[in-house]
Image (tube, rainbow, N blue to C red; front, top):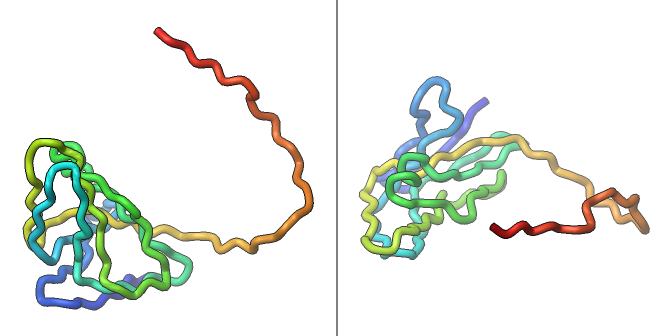
Length: 140
């Protein structure tokens, strides 16, 4: 199976795996960014991808950046038919300092996942499931 991609600028880097057994592929920033405290920005990779049929791309936070620098990902799904510049909505949730992302910095991980396309069928009624009807909240 192949992941085909195109570079949109000279700063674009191919998605790469960090090790042979890595689940995801590293995504790299194509530009320098400064993210103010408690803000977000769309970090561009300057790559276009052609996903294999039946797959989508899920962008996840890089665990090291998330743990050390309070970086998270918003809106992390890229559909099979998307052909634009792959960007990562990067959320900086630390309140006191600016976050600096330099060009060609490994920012997030993308995981390629199979998906099911479902046929939506309208029905008049459905069977009921047994769920808990009471929620108990315990306070200490």
